[in-house]
Length: 148
Image (cartoon, rainbow, N blue to C red):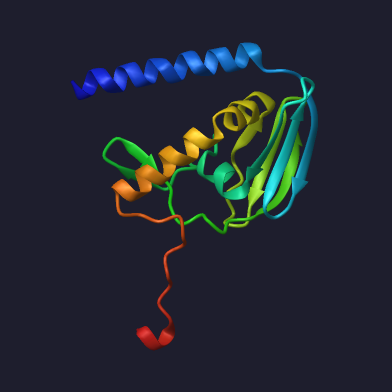
């Protein structure tokens, strides 16, 4: 039953990606509001403001996820992550460099559109996953020298 559910969910995500890719309008503008967010506007007038935390959590890079729990990839503790820079990659996207030194994700204009179109659902699912595994959006507290 659980395997069937995962298969159905994977198929829905694939269909949604294909639909988004086919329907993605042309990029009009991209603005970096370092360190907190990026704004992306498309030719059809749709605008998205995407936070650094959201972009870091949904990094398209293979190494963008920190922890595997079962079959889930979970990244936590990125509430205060910042964006240091955004470097153009051809005509199709940007490489975002975060202050936690993650810099391998290339965000295409289509991927920004997909993230923006699904921002609230993706963020809600991320928070649910963190809660399910007892993790937090906040960075873990480092032990001070007096605690050692």
